[in-house]
Image (cartoon, rainbow, N blue to C red; front, side):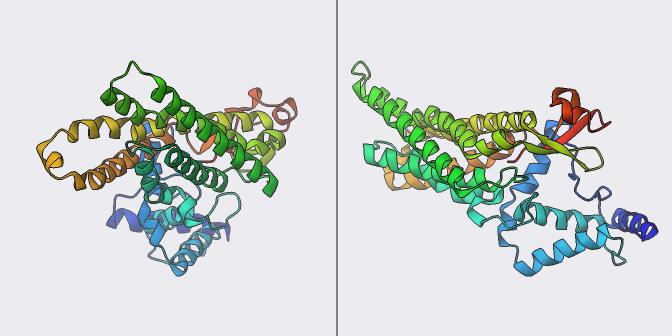
Length: 340
């Protein structure tokens, strides 16, 4: 079996080299180098590919089986590296890496842009009332909470009560910040109506960025209490680390601050310029469709840029972790699933 396991990847690689430029397949490893931002960017473009939302149950089973055949050295002849990379892309986009369970479609990273863009459009609508501000902030943080929970590090069980506490905390913080900023803008009499409207358009960013940090921390607080699994270079479990959990949450929180920057800052700037064009002034009904397209483009750019800041499987030196973990392995570094 060991001989078959080693020859199967080689056979697949040689077959692929004749038909494509795909690199040799490595099970469980990213297709692109994760040491550079560009490599992570290309990797996460695969992860968020919305086409994976349309993968059928049968195709998913075939992809998982193909990877199992590769793992056990029973790969059928003629399978190319490209087919193996495609199978792994499908599995990573749909199944959670820790539980191997399907992630509900709207909460997958590949569903973040399609399901999140209408919410972004709602957040950026001009002349919002107090009720509409509360509604869109609630909807946005509800979606974010579910995405954070669905893509968390799940090496430790998390009770439903923790999810509810985190969800309520995230929503209350988001709504409070957004409403507070809107009230301040409304009471700032020195602003002209046009300036006040422009400032109001930027209110969602500090509200969402602040609430996103609360959301990540509250939704994944259990990781700080229980720790997360760290693995050596061979994939063997070394132990459970609270320090690694802090690193994971910090890295994820930073991505959630960067993420709304292009989404909530660029569209107001672009729309303030487009609204002055003759086309939109003559056809005001086009404002909402145009804004939706601008938001979709900004979202499509921002998501892979933000989550590419750090690799999903992050590396940390064992000397920085708890003494019992440093003593449990001879590896200089260990890895952990940061979550997305």
